[in-house]
Image (cartoon, rainbow, N blue to C red; front, top):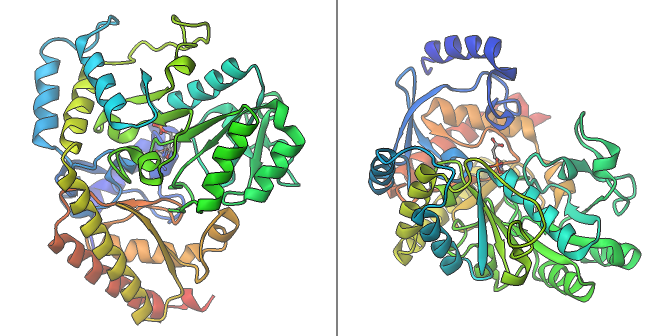
Length: 436
Ligand code: KE4
């Protein structure tokens, strides 16, 4: 058994200081039970907790750490920048460099605005779409998460294509009334929504590969429908690539699928682990943003010198195509190993993978939308998760999160992970959990 004494002690104190003892609910282990592990440092593909246990890390800070922890070029870039000052609130040449890299690497982006989180990026993109079109309604998809934007914290109304209802206390009906939630991978539902409300729809926002109900891939028909219906109804298509940007391909999902959204939101990898978000798109759309245009958006630490240094050092390294072929090789090896391990002990499962983001679902049926994901055996996942953790492997602490392979995970790491998964799945198969 892992010694987690100090972790427990620190987390107990944390709960007196911060709501739930954490600064983001995703890391609270709410979906798997037990206390979260208090981490002390990361190095390459590994995390070390404050009890000096080592884990092969597949969360990677929920996506940003595609180059692994403490990448030397990123660390050196931040170390260099910090001696020039932490923040000026004035333009810097580094912001030009990061903007140039984003424009060069993300096919649909001609101009970009840097912000400090993915939530800020999606919140701004929604405001921009409403400002440009003069329309109010935004369509999102069940099981897609776009950060804690009031107008996007919305559950599907009773008949799926009705306007949304607040999904959190504090989100008012006024905020949610212009948000429509429909099923992902359902072109007919989207077509009906446009048929009923087309002239009022400002934008459709989507995760072009979903990470937030576990990894779910869009069908070709669905992708054609979102692009065709938004175009034909003069609405804007927003690809929320906060997770998929620079992850599923160097140019994100839009490059992988050959799609051209009108606005793209970015986060996570674009900051290399430092707080950065970004939104960008066609020049004529982005020039609506203040001070070029009249759609308001601002931020004290937007384009922060340390964050831009980390982002530049990260994106410059990701221009090496060998990184993505290596990510594909390691991720395919992991997927095959997990699938075999689950099949060998007769555990009902399915896997979805796009590049280096993947999910092992405890569900025998294909998972194409939230209704399917909601049928997963989450108790089985929780037992699997803790079995892995006890064996030094750190998977996402929820069935509804994608796992991430980094460029520094080795074949040995993958094989050790598969061996740990085989043991954990065998334990699960032999337990009463699977009988339920
Ligand atoms: P942030 O505000 O957390 O930087 O980004 C929000 C966001 C926007 N869009 C997508 C597709 C996202 O996945 C996210 C954030 N992802 C979660 C994990 N699935 C972040 C983890 C957390 O909230 O602690």
